[in-house]
Image (cartoon, rainbow, N blue to C red; front, side):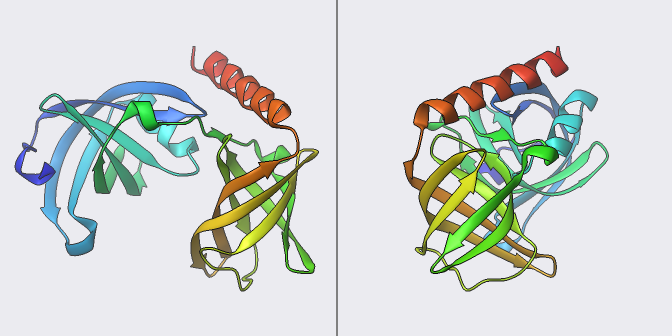
Length: 200
C-alpha cells in the first residue's frame, strides 16, 4: 500500500500532464492519512512550475515517484502550491494517451442526446474521448449513447462518467466514432506545441 511507503517531510520527484506535455517538479509531503474509499490522502507542497500546471488542468492529476515506482492520484483540493491527493493507482505510461485542455474560446459545442441538443463546453479531448461541461442537468447516465458536435467534428460516444453539481454536470465520454480522426489528431498535436512553447 502507498500509505506504508510515504514518509513525512520527504521530497518526491513528481510530474503532471498539461495538454500531453509533462511538467516536472518536486512534491514535499506535509502529512497523510487513510480516509475510507479515498484511500491514502496526502497533502503535498509543490514546486511553483508544477503547481501552476495543475491550475490549468481540467482533470487534476499528479504523478509521484515513491520507492522507484510511479503512482497517479486525483487532486481533490488545491490552494496555491499545496495540494491534497487521493485515489492513488499505479501509473503505467504505456497505457497513457494524450489529453489536451481546450482554450475557453474554443470550448463551445453541442451534446446530442435522444432528440435534443444541449449547449456544452468541451474542456479536454483526446483521440479516445472528451470531458465536457453542461450548465444544466440532463438525464444521461453511465452507458448512455450520445453525440458530440465540436470544432467542425462530429463524434458518437458512450458516457463513461457523470458528476453533478449545483452548476450543472461534468460528463466523460469515450468515442465510438469520429468524423475525421486525422483532423482530431492534428488539433491535439497543435495544442501540444502551443503548450510546449508556453512552458519553454
